[in-house]
Structure formats: structure tokens, C-alpha cells
Image (cartoon, rainbow, N blue to C red; front, side, top):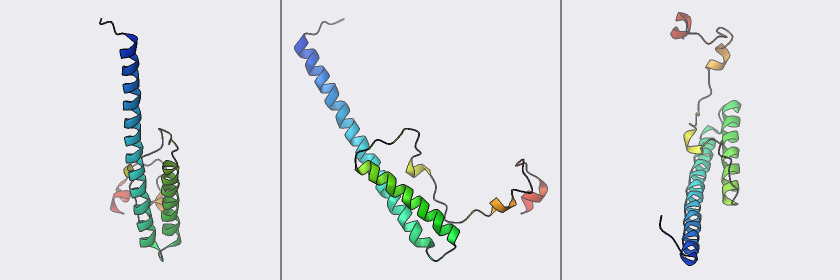
Length: 118
């Protein structure tokens, strides 16, 4: 093992800290850009469903509010929890789900020939 004097060790520690800080700043900037994009997409989706059904509008508004909250928190420098889903990984579904009303027929979720025909 190579023996390093104190000045070199301090310089290496300082370099590593600055390198980690630069990487954290880049990551924060990328996350803020992603949150801005998700916020803008959610706003566009909300505008698109305006005048539609109340359920679709409320779902789009909830998505928009969530995106704005995430964007504001990142903009203000807050750290998001690691278990929070990434905004770009969640698909935006503008159409309301019609299968929710049919769950009473098949509570176990098993496929039956009647379900395949619907």
C-alpha cells in the first residue's frame, strides 16, 4: 500500500467532496427538469380534458397538483424520498377506466370466456 502524506490526503478528500457535490447538483438539475416536464405534460392533459367528464377532469387535476407539488419541492431544494415513483415512469391515462364497474362479476380476477368477449 502506498503511503500518502497528510496534505495529499486532505487534497484527495477535498476533491472527492467537491466531485460528489457536483454530481449531486447535476442529479438535482436533471430531477428538476424531469419534474418541470411532468408538470407541463400534466397541465396539457388537464387542458385537454377540460369540458369532459367530471371524473376525467378530477383525475387530471389530481395528477397536475401532484406534479406541481413535486416540482415546487425540487425547486426549493427539498430531497424527495427514494421510494417516490418517478414522474416519467407513470403513464398518463386520459381515458377513464371502464373495467372498474365490471369487477363485481369476477372478484378473484380470473379470466373467463365471458370476460374475454367484453
